[in-house]
Image (cartoon, rainbow, N blue to C red; front, side):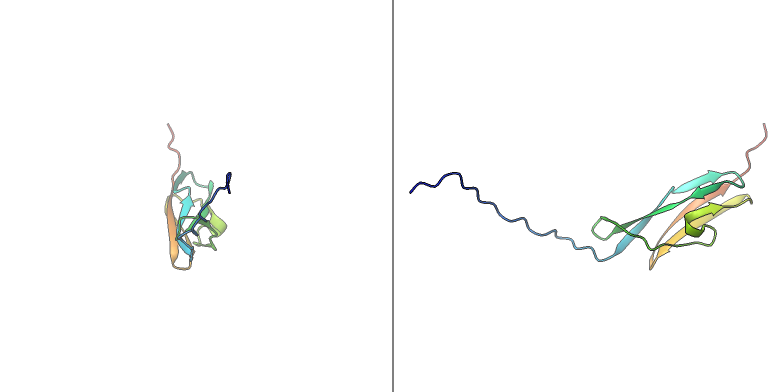
Length: 100
């Protein structure tokens, strides 16, 4: 008996990594420089322990509710987002444009 045209395949093994939670958060932008009165909208991106994208249940610092930073006072500020024990920070420098 002749058998032709058969293709045997080995099933793919399951992904060796099963995500169990948030591993890191990245803030975008990572830093910003603005003049007094300008705003900066930050976005938080989560990465799980397998390297895939995941949701961040963000708690933002008081100076950036919902990721929106704004102030009329010059200085250097830190914006922080936290989800459980994982956090990320970005620096915002607020300075007036010098007169020339």
